[in-house]
Image 1 (cartoon, rainbow, N blue to C red):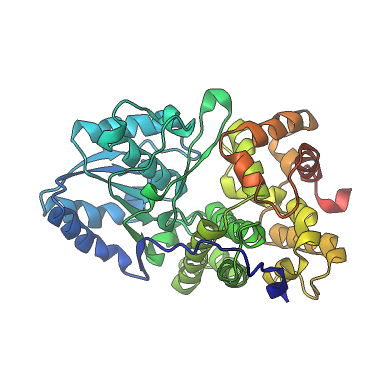
Image 2: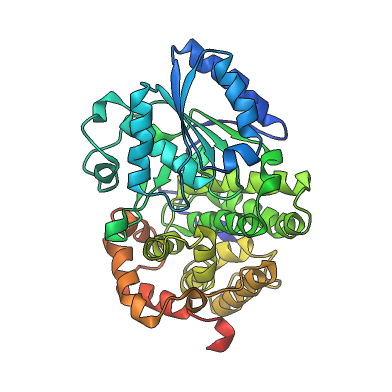
Length: 407
């Protein structure tokens, strides 16, 4: 049983901070949230999103009148891109400063909400002299931020309920992660009806992101029974409902449970942190910004499982029971679990490996260097259950170039 892997003498943090409105129809809660903003004396907000999502999901047709009817001004920043950059954050923050925004509303997935979180720090008067590069090179502490509201449109990142944000520094190929209490959203909205417009690829990749969150959190050096409980449930729900959502995009029941899996995945890694897979994906999308985050994670997950399984077989056997029948939680079945998860990924549509996306063996040294040198990523790697060395990281990248069956 995985319980044997818990250190009962280790004191861990159990974090739950954000008030999340969850369920079909939760979008209507923007009216209550706008009342709250008004009561707090906030008369202007910055809205961060991309040029499509805030309209196609129907969020804006509910949010805009809610703001306007209460006399709350807004600056609408719609230039958020996948793998957002520090330059985009600076642009958004400048728009917010112009109208003296006292809060930020992020509409979208991780990119839009993380842009909003980052801008919320820069909008705080304590940091008027700083920019987003300073923020993501950790030249100041980001300990304060204006209130954040997250209207989530994907079921993968969990950023609507956690203290993390990510942004790229293009000229350095860095993609650091910010982790501070100030960027917990005050309110979040998780409405499955918003998710029905997700393209098939994003439906798959975001669910794979949620799965990776809990795999890493449940096997980190600071995991807890709380995290493992959420990990096993998140993995079960993804296995059951992802195929259904792909086959029937309008199935609200499937969307509901994928969204729930994503939310508890966000809480899970907020508590248990991350390690190999995320620390190694960030260099992948830092080098190739067009790479979908969830795809990058999916391509390297099997090799990570093979690496860490001997250190925590009971936990991983519990998590992957719906994916790989017959796991007994023994160290010697690492390859069986890794190969079974890779086959599951292929079956749901994650059929590419690193070589298919243009990465070569020549890139491996650069990727390995970035995994250790990018600010914050070495900290993630230090949480791995198997000590992260350059040789181990290099081997995971190499083993992820092609399918396991081609070795």
